[in-house]
Amino acid sequence: MKEGDFVRKKDKSAIDKAYENYHFSEVKIDENCKIYRLKNKTGAGEMRCYDLSQGIQLSFNDLNMNSSYQEIPARNGILQIDYCIDGCYEIMLKKGDSYFIGKGDVSVTDLGKEVIAYSRIPLKRYVGITIFIDMLPAQTFFDAVFHHNEIKLGRIANTLCMV
Image (cartoon, rainbow, N blue to C red):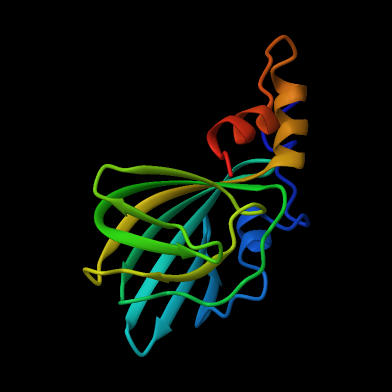
């Protein structure tokens, strides 16, 4: 197996699956990354996304807006891990719970279990890193690369994302 065997350009990325039907003001493919730009009446932001392996993408997020919310349905099989570098982000779920992620916080979300009713950026500033994991292709990658290791993404998601 050689480098790049598991990153297939024709496959839809975990980010594209997670944000399918989300309206970005611009999507640009650069030499090394895919850039998603957001713009609305409350401000603007950018996500710079990189393929790490089959089913796993990394996004550097820089949002300077009050909200980036758009209604999107639950996405089964997608795990989202967020780390806040600066600012904060608040999410309200349809079931009534709300989550706040601030500087230094980590959040792990199973996008198939949590339906977002609304989100906002109270300080109009959020800088963070997100890892998107499409669990089926990522598990295939882990099984092929780590033959003797027991990395089971479903078990990890069930442990960290108890709903």
